[in-house]
Image: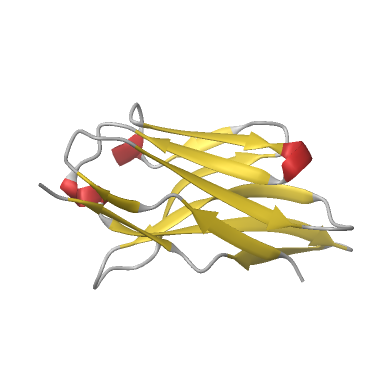
Length: 119
């Protein structure tokens, strides 16, 4: 079992910044990829950003140029720097970590952290 724990959410005004952190306790496992999804009330959970163990990143178009994902492989920790936040970024942000067991990819999820962008 891998524990995934997020931190760093909160309330911020439009145009402000927040930094989310996520640590995966993965003793004995190699984490392939980590990233963030978000889910606003009444909507589906959507991918925001992802990063592989080699550092390749991917972002949803709506956050490109504003959000930056980074990773510390030694600590199995991923960060999401969110700048120029907009009200539409309000959501619960969920971190995930992908590990490989034999030939199967297994995804572990965090509990989520609330991000609210409002004046």
